[in-house]
Image 1 (cartoon, rainbow, N blue to C red):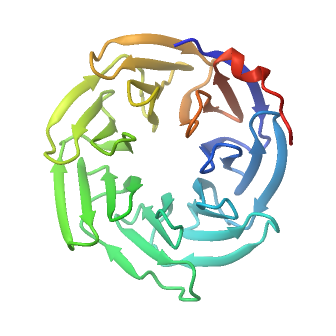
Image 2 (spheres, helix red, strand yellow; image 1 turned 90 degrees about the vertical axis):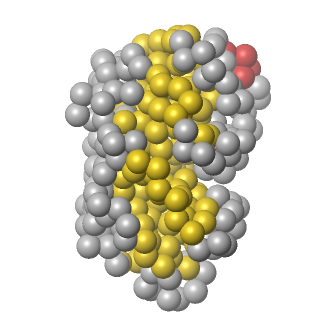
Length: 303
């Protein structure tokens, strides 16, 4: 894993709560405690747009499949659907009784799916003017912490220690209980496995179909933070932030630690692997740190 620090971006928006790539990795979004979302070119560090309209901290954001819209989730209990080019809210969706912690689009970006501290997952049809959720899932017993949305499935993780898979086509729910609060959830690119970051400082690899525990990864520090994890290098490596200002990489199959990246002195809590390349974004305090293979920087950047 030949990764080097390539760029540090001071977001100047209080604490960065989450960092996310858009669908093709040409832009990224930072969510701030200053109630704003910022759109960046991560290759140059150039700020492209600022989106302001939430009344509390922004916890998550996602770009649409054609990169012309953004949805954001905030502790003000609302979801906002933004026009990327104008920077203006197209629609403000209120229906959650608690702060919204996570947000995702479906594959066509016609539905936004949100998870909240009110223990519910809500689906919003954002292409119509309908302001109410088209569907609300109320099975969780605690805060929803992360969502994975595919063509016909919505998968949620919760602090109640369970992963719930909603099959939209079949109308079925499968619940796998780990028994430890789950703070973050991602799916491997092949869709076969789920990676669950847990509050006990263990990341668990789970078979998507059987719910079987396949592997565990330890060595990062969680403390009381929500630390995100990811899957890199074509589903062969696991990466996680850590409370001691580092990112740890493990071999997915062997479970052994491969490398420890020293990012800074503050907690590295959010990360985003590039959808196709080797770059990885890390959030620490008010900065985005861009790491990647050194030769990728030699490409001519045309903005």
